Length: 171
Image (cartoon, rainbow, N blue to C red; front, side, top):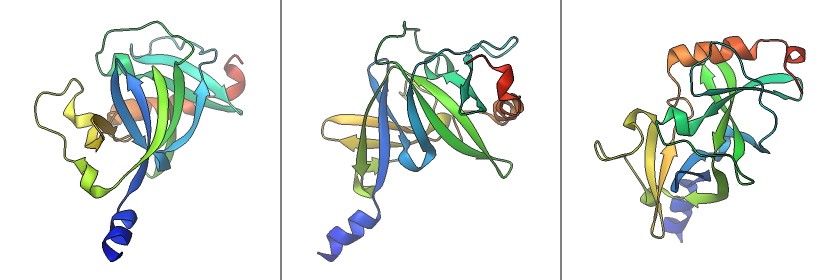
């Protein structure tokens, strides 16, 4: 019984989603909410992976296309396409970012025995973005670090855009 309790204490929950038939995840504690794709307002002179911004209850939230960020082949949006709103820390400040994904799957719980460090080679996504690799049944889950997906320069840019008046963003 004690071993089971210890494993439960060491487990975490993850929101899983898909990109190009691969399963990815963010730790649930970093996820604020999941949205259907709404109108995204383009912002001039932004990096190619930045789809634009959305107005989320009066706040400006930059939306990043993870397919483009991870240098995957583009895909048309469909009914499964979603925006995952995640939070990350930057310079002691909470930054909110929307991550455009192919589809959201489910919330899963993984204990420490199901999580390993990412391999150094052979990944479709740069290792710098990956926190760990989870294993659930026959599936491998690429666990992303919300803070590592974006460089310091990109987070500075996101913070600058987020401070824009939400009224300037079309609803």
